[in-house]
Image (tube, rainbow, N blue to C red):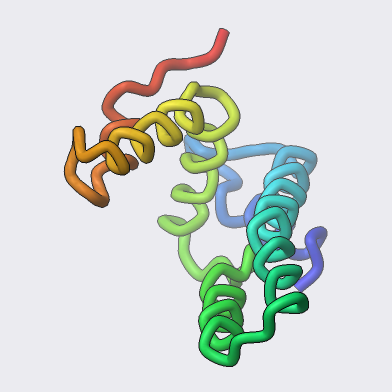
Length: 127
């Protein structure tokens, strides 16, 4: 699906709701999702090209399928979650707190898998 058609679908789902956004913002969200996806996938693919490992290749392929950035929007709830996540990453200090949470996990200061909850409880708007 192209970024433009995905953004149009996001816009259409949210039109007339409290979560309504502009077409330009929907396209910006699509761009960000695609860029984030390739930021994560390209290093994995580069590593595979140097050291081919069939097991790792299978995991990378599964990751690529499961994390498709422009996966079809099938419900209003999913569209709302997309906008909430975008706002969380762009308009708050969530990403810095998430990195801090991962560090705390590695140091066994919080339980494994609790970094997201740690960041969500402490996030604040960026002024």
